[in-house]
Amino acid sequence: MNRKKWKIPEQRGALLVLTALLLPVFFACAGVAVDLGSMYAHKSNLQNAVDAAALAGAAGYIAGEETVENHPGANTMSDEYLKADLGKGYQNLIDKDFQA
Image (cartoon, rainbow, N blue to C red):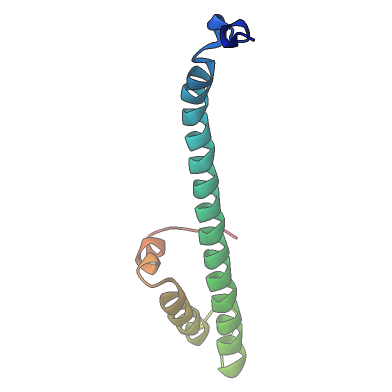
C-alpha cells in the first residue's frame, strides 16, 4: 500500500493555522477570567470591611451617649475598622461622597 495515497495535500498545515487563530482567543478568555476573579475578590473584601465598620459603628452608637444628629463615637469606631481592614485603600475612600 502506498502511503502517499492517504495524504491529502490541501490539508497540510491546517492545524497550524487553526492554532494560530485560536491562541489569541484562548489568551483573551483567560485574561477576562483572571480580571473577573480579581474584581469579585476585591468586591468581597470591600463588602466585608464595610459590614465590619457598620457593626462597629452600631456598637459605638449603643455604647455611648449619642443621638441621631451627633454620634462621634460611632464615626470613630467605624473609621478605625475601615482603616484596619482596607489599609492603603482607605485613603482612596476618604475623598469620595457616598449616598445610601
